[in-house]
Length: 325
Image 1 (cartoon, helix red, strand yellow):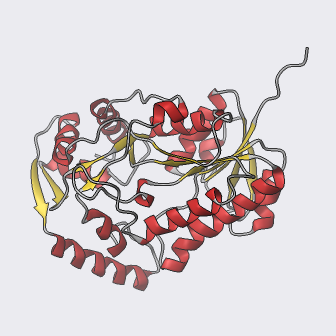
Image 2 (cartoon, one colour; image 1 turned 30 degrees about the vertical axis):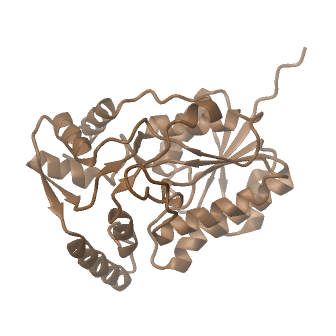
């Protein structure tokens, strides 16, 4: 009797924060993994892993089609929110997704797209509905989703919308931890509740999505670690993970908007993207970044395993071990 065929998975964005952990979890699940990387990518994190590496350009459709030959699933985790222009942002998220869609059509493989809660947008009030994207990043992600979902009758597509992802290996939340260590955490004035997810749980959800081939194509699934907590409570968990107590300083939105505009100007002068841009401030101006945690189980057969308190403790420990705190 022949052994079942080992599935082969192509991962874009594999050298990113979520991508690296996803590659490890795919290998642990018994999959063969091929990573798509630029020639300039730092691949040292994969040196001891039994993977294939395809060097190419996600902006070149022929390169993506070549990388997809022989794979069963494409996990499309590339595409970020930091760019020098709206056109560059769309190229990172929309053009690359179109190339992945075309490669999947040519190869006949499934696609799991790692989108973002930014595509849903925030809630309109504590019990309201999602209002749609409020940033250029969210609009780019939603446009990328539409490209894949528009082909879901011929390509098996699953779209995941994770919230804020944190954990060992992340540097975006480091300033918050540093502030907490000093006893003072700045928060945008309107922040009320926000969903979070540990990177290990996010990667595990992605692996579950690759396994659910019997599910109907075109599913859009929010993934998160449970009910969204009060934002101030999250900040106090971070302080507790560091063994400190921190006061919360509310930053008025006009101040944030000035900072975003100043950073955008500096970004253009230095030709380097920034994290706190005007686009990011448009997201920070919202009160309720809340993901629906009730659809993961039925849609993916997945349950998160890392509580926010434990996850923040892990993250604080990693920052300290790395000498970052």
